[in-house]
Image 1 (cartoon, rainbow, N blue to C red):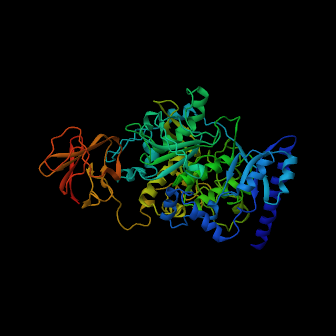
Image 2: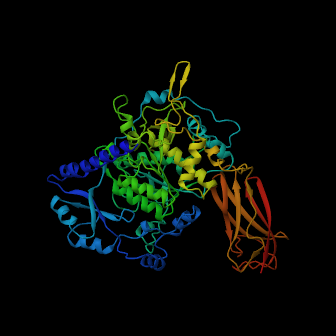
Image 3: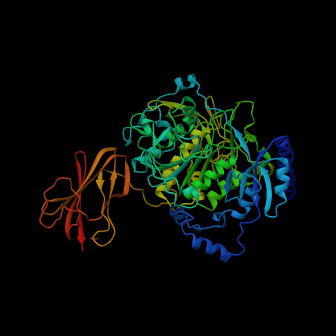
Length: 637
C-alpha cells in the first residue's frame, strides 16, 4: 500500500510539472495566455476581522444562500465567502492588466499575460501561484435519423396522473418519476441552476435590475420567457451570459440562425428537466424554479474556459441554487493524471459548492467521440471526477450501458484499487431521450450523457422538495443505495453483469421514489384532488402580517379563483391565478385582510374602500372549474 502511494505521488507530481511547465511554455510561445493568478491570503489578519466583515456586511451573502446552508446544518459564512483582497486586484490593474474573472473561493483572478508579464507578476509578494486557465473544445450534438425511426413507443399507464406521451414515458418510468408525480412531487420550491449554452427565451418587458445587492452575483432578478410551447410555464428567475458578460442568456437581437443554434443545446437540456406539454412531453421537475448560466459555446471551433464555469458556480450560490446541472467538462487541457477528485481548479470549486455550500453538483461524465477507438477509462472530464460531485453516465432504453458514455475509474483509483470510488455514480437514459427542439413547436431526441445528467438533476429536485435538509452527500447516498441494476451488456439468451457497483455504470439507474423513502418510515404525501388546504395562521389577527391560503392541484388548471365571504353570504375578497401546474402550493394565495372586490354587494360591517374587514368568521372558497373546496377562517382584532 505504501509503495503504491509513493508511485501515485511521484506520477502525480510529474504530471503537474508537465502541465504547468511544458504546456505553459508551449502556450506562451509568442502569445499572451489567459492565466489564473492565485493570492496567498485575503488580507484578513485574524478571526476578529473576519467576523466583523460579515457583521458589517449582512447582505454580502444572500438570504436564499444562507437559508440553504442552515437547512443543511452548514455554516452560513465561511472563509471561502470572503472577498478577494481589493488591494491585490488594484496592483494588477495599475500594472495594466484587465481582470477577466474573480474567484473568491479560489482566492484569485484571471488575466491575459505574456511570458514577461508572468515572470513579473510571480515576484509580487501576495502572489501564491500562476497557472493557465483550462479550455475545452466541444463537438456539436448530432442526430442519427435511423436510430430515431426505430425508437419504440411506450404508452403511459392508465393509473398515472399525467399523460407523458408515447416517446417520453420510458425516460420517466425508468427513474420511477411517474410514481412521485402521482404523489404530488414536481420540484416545487427547489432552485436549479442550468450551466449550458443558454436557452431560447426572451426578456420580460417588465425587467427590474436590483443594483443594491452585493456581491454583483445577486443583482440580476428579472424574469425570462422561454419560446418553446412546452416551456411556457417554466419559472426562470434570471440568467447570465458568462461568455459575453451580459445579464441575459437568451435571444438578444432578432434571433439569427447562429444565435438559435448557439442556444439549442441548453434549450434541450431545460426541456428534459422542466417541460410540461400533456400528451407529448412532461419532464421530472416542471414545478421547480430555474436560473440559466451560459458557460458554454456550442460551435465546435470555439473554446469554453473554466473560469466562466467557476464564476457561474459562485453566482448560483449567491442566488441560492439548490442544484447545479452541468453537461460541461474539461479534458482537452487536463490530462488523465489529474483526474484525482480534487486536483483541477474547476473540480476544487465544484467540491466547495457541494461540501461547504450545500449545493448538489450534478455533472455529466462525458461522451466517447469515437466508439471503439477512444479509451473510455481515460476520457473522464473535470469536474466529473470530483469527490463530492454526483456524476452521471448513460444507458439505453433497455437499461443497457450506452457505449457513448465515458466510464471510470478516476486516476487515483487507477493507481490504487483499494480506493472505493466509482465514476459514474448513477446512470440514466443517454441514447435518445425525448425533448424539445430549437423551434417553438417541435420535439426531437438528443444523444449523450448531457441528456442523462439533465434527467437526474431534475429527479434530484424532487428529492430535495421532500427533504430540503438533506446535504448533497445525503442525496447521493439515497440514490446509490436504492438504485436499480442496469445491464453491462446483453448477449443472446443471457444477461451479463460485472461486479456491482462498477466503473461502467456505477451503482445503477436511480429509483427516485425509493430514494425519497430511503430514510422515511411513513408513506409520502399524495395529491387526491384540487383542493384548498388549511389557512394559516388561524385565527388571524388583523394587526399581524398576512393570512395564507395553501392549496394543492392534481391536474393543470386554466383558472383558479379564491373567494372570501362573510357568514351572511357577502363577498369581501377575490383573487385568481391562471395556468396553475400540478403541485402543492404552501404559500398559495396571500391576503392582508383588506377588502378587494371588483363587483359585489357588501354587508354593513364591510368597507369596500380599502379598509380591513371586521373581526368574525369567514368562509373561504377555492374554485377550479366545476370543483369547489371550502375552509373557515377566524379573523380577530
